[in-house]
Amino acid sequence: AQMALERDYEVQREYDTRYRVLLEATSEAFVLISVGAGRVVDVNPAASALIGLPREDLMGQVLAQEFEGRRQGEFLQELAASARDDTVRPLDLHLRRSELRVLVTPKAFRAAGDQLILCRVEPAIAAVGVSDDLT
Amino acid sequence: AQMALERDYEVQREYDTRYRVLLEATSEAFVLISVGAGRVVDVNPAASALIGLPREDLMGQVLAQEFEGRRQGEFLQELAASARDDTVRPLDLHLRRSELRVLVTPKAFRAAGDQLILCRVEPAIAAVGVSDDLT
Image 1 (tube, helix red, strand yellow):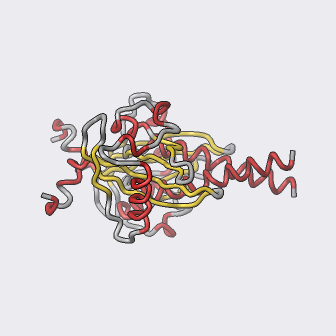
Image 2 (cartoon, one colour):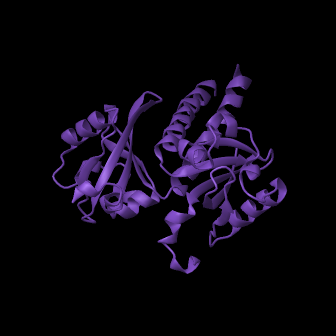
């Protein structure tokens, strides 16, 4: 049993590295939030640049405070509701520091007993070309 | 030691899930290749759509055969050379099935003793706006 566990452990170690490399390699901005603690548990370089704060200052922070007029409780509820929605309607928000309008697409999942939400954050300008009725 | 291993295992299980969710959530196309076996070990929905083959048909395949005029050996060498290059110059390739011109940005890394290359695949049309000197 010990050997099987060690073998599994090796396989899982590989996913740890795959996750890190993928998170750095994607040019899309991603923030991972723990719902229980309501805090940022991971953030990639693209998200850090978009939000306008270095990674170390974002880690462990309440993400809601980075958006205009959003309080933690309602923000997490909005994210959870949007993540449940099959139509995947992104949240339309304003970043406080960079003053950018962004679309946030959340994806809720459970891992090792934690409820997590992965948020993809896109500048809304890039989305204007896709749908002209935004004007 | 057994308990510590089990605790680590739980943490690593979480990364397995994080990796999966991120790979599905990104709208960028990613293909993961094992250098030793020279085969596709993972591919996301965006990459599958771009290449024009379902995931199950791509898994375990030689990726080189999906590109025009590329043989396995030279293809892996090109990828490895591009991944080593600090300037990160993407490879300019043509997809055989979809007949799309794409830019492939490889990132080499080791995980659990395997040499892996993560390839980000972008349609070249989208990249034209970014750098005008391509013409």
